[in-house]
Length: 93
Picture 1: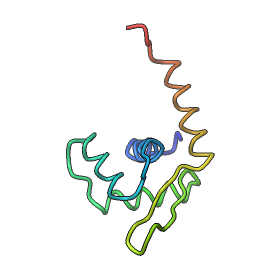
Picture 2: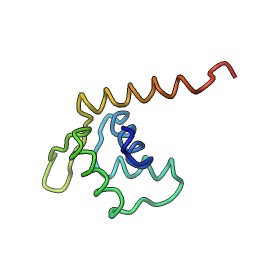
Picture 3: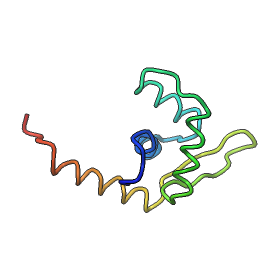
Picture 4: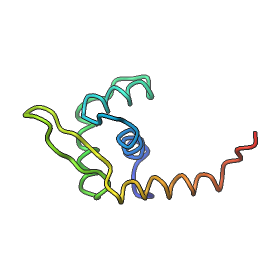
């Protein structure tokens, strides 16, 4: 996960956390977090990068809607990142 941008990492986390991870749901979730519009030209190329890296799987729900799910590798990367972060974050405060 070290080679992902912060935006790609956020995409991966959102996909892992949504019950229905399709493009518009992911976009809405990120827009709420970033408090600004996420353009398709930014969203979909980064989703494709996660697919190419084997962290996310893309499938077609219908003619217009793609669904995204984390792969086993993607889930392992999220868990490894959480463990790494925990080493540096003091949770007692």
